[in-house]
Image 1 (cartoon, helix red, strand yellow):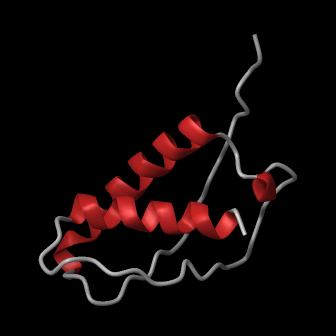
Image 2: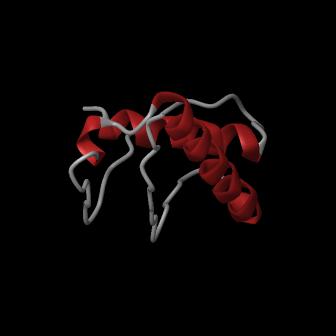
Length: 87
């Protein structure tokens, strides 16, 4: 049986524009949950397999429907992060 790699992902600062500041903790928790889900489901992106440390990364942009729940925003942010590592 193959062992899954032990991954430590440290996001020092996540900057999101256009979202209520009061939602920041719920968005952050959703990002963490979705990243864990995506990494365990899809495995480690090749860019991270060899020590993918980056001083900064632009996650790009995405569209959300007005008044989207913080959990949906966080999940979308996580998918954008994983997508950037896959490029």
